[in-house]
Image: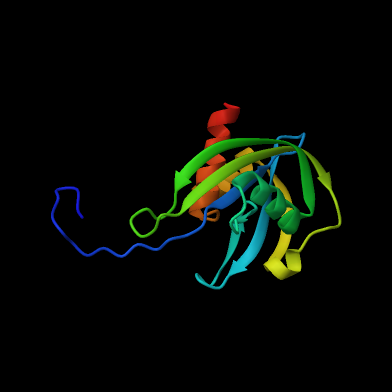
Length: 151
């Protein structure tokens, strides 16, 4: 049913929530991952992220951070909630700030297709966005949520 009460045909994809994580170190640098995206035939710089697999968003965020970077964080804060592709699906995204980071050897980067991880200063990430080299929209959205919260 449309907003005006008239019947119409509309297809909607249903998706479990997803999470995006801003791993922020003591130098105020954000950890990003670099990987090849088959769907766009491009290398992509992104923040760690993934599907919730039916888990609560914070539980999924902790799992994804470990899988993609090998890191754990002692401090977590949800900093945003956003709609993903809301003209096509009911997909919700949750952004988390992860601080007080510890590196472990328990990553699954090879399975995740991640070529490398690195920490970048926020100004460098903004420069890459401006230059059109940091293009993954949900990562950009989560970073903007972090910048608003961090002031």
